[in-house]
Amino acid sequence: MVETVEKLSAVKGMADVVPDQSAAWQYIEANIREVMQNYAYTEIRTPILERTQLFKRSIGEVTDIVEKEMFTFPDQNGESLTLRPEGTAGCVRACIEHALLRNQQQQKLWYMGPMFRYEKPQKGRYRQFVQLGVEAFNYPGPDIDAEQLALCARLWKRLGIEHMLELQINSLGDAPSRNAYKKKLIEYFSSNLNKLDEDSKRRLHANPMRILDSKNPEMQELIAAAPVLLEHIDVASKEHFEGLQRDLKALGIKYAINTRIVRGLDYYNRTVFEWVTDKLGSQSAVCAGGRYDSLVGMLQGPETSSVGFAMGLERALLLLQLAKPDLHHTIDCFLICIGSTAEAQRLILAEKIRDQVPHLAMHTYLGSGSLGNLFKKADKSGAQFALIIGDEEVANDSVSIKFLRSEQPQQTVAINAIKSILGDL
Ligand code: HAM
Image (cartoon, rainbow, N blue to C red):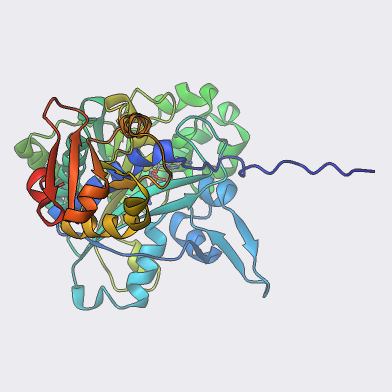
């Protein structure tokens, strides 16, 4: 009997990036690298796997991510490991481990890479997704919060998606005022116990602020009437929030205060923010973050003021595709060698050309054919120029250049002068 073998496919919620899509990815990544340089942030790379305990202690035990969404498994030694659901925890762990925050050392760091959450996949929401993360340590003032938002605004502008994004900000205050508020929240929800769903009942005493995060439509009315944290924050946090708003106004960055932003991770205090869009259905947050001044201390590091954010690259990419639908890989030149002498030398000739124009994107045609047929292929490749080398060109160490996208007449130049025609590609 012939056994049927199941066709293998990618794991649910984990997508391939095929060549047609990789140009847009590279475009966004190149812009990110340049903007990071603009603001003097340096890259940090941390492992994709961390000890499970790290996420439990930093993100919080009673959060959606830790309770339901982590890819966790024991290794061969029985140690519990987790595919990182976000990057802040690993970044902080690495900073402590390498003493990067010793003596109040300031750090401005970024990272980019895959994160993993066991969520229900839909447009803009995946089980493997890429985040750009940006974190600044030992900058206590609101000016760094504002600078990070200016950084985001600059990136949106470079990508041409600024008109699709709105900045929303809020303040969660510091721990004592937040704890007092949590008591008020417990009182409020306790007096409406019959309206709470099971998840919220469970969270009522352990983490009442998570109830505000609930997506359950039947609870939205109750949540809308709950006490507002921003009205209960301490004086220092209020001043910080006012300072941030002053800076944003001075920078001309438009924002709205959204008192309902509480964030789904436990480590935040004071400033929290989200860049949201109405172009991606329910996955509206493209970029989100805030202050987390206690996290480094909580993970046994030195007391360190911290602020950062993460951007979901797939979501930014969906917006980029709306703004710039024509991002595809292109080549500059299509090299055609005609006749047995040129064909025999084409790899060497191509290397000589690349030596002359270092950034050249050139495809060397490796078959043979009639000139007419090869020009058709050159045209189809999308290249700007066809470079032609026949017997005569080989003898003279030259190359003929046909302009495929303009009416200029064909020219023949020495290979070592090709730059004068192709320019600084
Ligand atoms: P977060 O809000 O959990 O924050 O995620 C940040 C962004 O990652 C979201 O706004 C969204 O764009 C993207 N994202 C999250 N989950 C998914 C998913 N399943 N599929 C696609 N995109 C997703 C954090 O992760 C914090 N570490 C941010 C931070 C850094 N706070 C301080 N520093």
